[in-house]
Image 1 (cartoon, chains in turn cyan, green):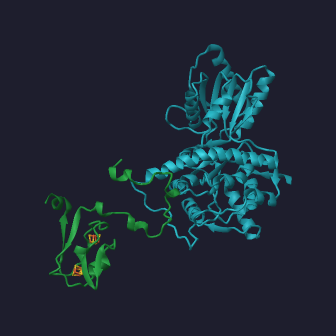
Image 2: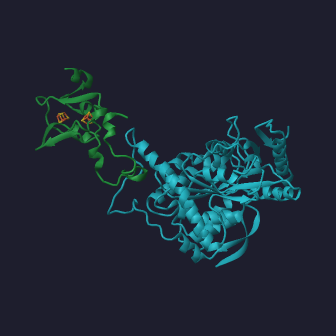
Image 3: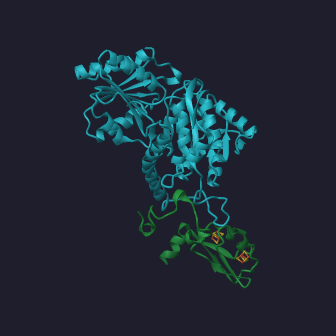
Length: 393
Length: 102
Ligand code: SF4
Ligand code: SF4
């Protein structure tokens, strides 16, 4: 059973958390995530959940408390954004390497400085190598769906990794959307019970969590982590399929939008993929064979599946809402180009950095990107590999 | 890889996430190799006060029948705390390098 509701993205996530009913939530408020914590703490105060809510004094503590709770066998959640995520940095890696399936919605916001509270992906993209699974959403529906699926992915015995559920700040988090929410009991049935093999509270079988790990074992533990990430890819697909059976919604790694016969295409993630769909529709009306690949799973990176889906394209633009300051383009671009190289692809790929600090990106701007791709297709020449979309010269 | 590490179990057979699931297995982890100075007791001077035994951070001083018998060199890291605390200066720290040359 499901209900149609009109909620903001933050309300959607807070309600997903209510339905999950985690054992522990340790969170600190930060714009634009604040509402999630505020609404969820109201659920706690009203007795709608059984959660122990830990009001920590910083995000470093929020993630540390989540690590302790998860190591004790609890389902632990937190949520953050931007500088809050940056303050968690040290513990992000500890959560992943200790193999703790914590779930954390991140409401994507530009990382200071200069200080800015609006959307881009510089927060989560910086954490792409931390060992967390990363899911991205186009809208509140997908952010809700990803949150419900997250524990089932992270807790899988072949995975045991934390999951970051990303949602664009303000654009999704503060806009009201019509979407479908599952019945509470269906969520409970879907996520099931969590019974980890080793926990700190199992007094019969005492364990040590987080001991020093030197030259003779650290590498082996990292190798295990790489293997878990491989498994995560398979599990993300399985869980997506199960969720699809329950709801009729969703896809595993990415959504292909009019990609089959497309000659010019865009790869992007987050809310701008909605804008890109409108651009694709307009260009299709003009007879331009435009398509879109909207990424849902960014870590692990489904490289082979992506290059397979893009194989009919001639020219491709990757949109990045984050800069790496490597002088070689954005993070998604680097991954896509490396995947294309492995696939011996002849697709010409260019990169656009867009929307930093919440800069609005409109349909006509995305259309202009497709027009640039058309020019490359006709001339066979790339003038600039990496460009900045919507910045004043 | 160091030869001694090649004998250790591989990534497929060790607990995940660096967990220690076997209590007290620090005993199996030989830390004696970290030592650059080796403590030596002069039994003639020792008054068996057990101060070194209390202070040793690695429980590496062996006591039997209320007498100090020597050291667990598999675990003694050579920190020198015992020598520093001994009230009668019965413990000398000798450089490992010089010992093995002899
Ligand atoms: S040198 Fe340090 S570790 Fe070795 S026996 Fe003395 S106190 Fe213990
Ligand atoms: S502290 Fe000195 S005197 Fe006392 S037991 Fe140890 S070696 Fe002997």
